[in-house]
Image (cartoon, rainbow, N blue to C red; front, side, top):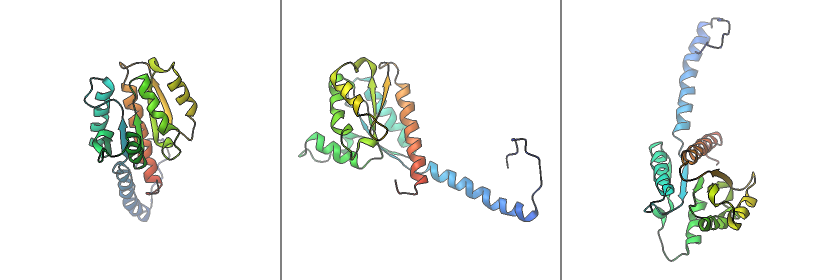
Length: 188
């Protein structure tokens, strides 16, 4: 046990020592269980075939999340039936994921997020990253008005040269969801 706290060393009885030998491994098992709790993450943004730095970031997030045991998918991977309008297909996808990470790369694509940020069924799952270079227009300003503690989360980054923050915030959100899924014992 860790006694780096400066607590007085009061020895345990032999029975208490035996009890602790059973308790400590169980604590370690529970903590390992948290690490194995997968989070489903849907990654929206520019086409994975584009030259956009955000497309590369989506692929990096997908890889890192999968390496860490999570179910991370770009929306393009999940298009199973082209008979549906993109909005309907994406909404069907959004219903099934724990977290939706959106990285629109143009002022116009920010408008696409409105459909989902205003939808009560999925808005609380949305983590939207906006480039500060694209926040002056109607689309981003009205999206900002939709952000509350019970709806989507919007994070800002200065430009495409500063995407490490987008990566870090995403990974932090996944960890928090992972912890919550374990805390809620599958009820999340």
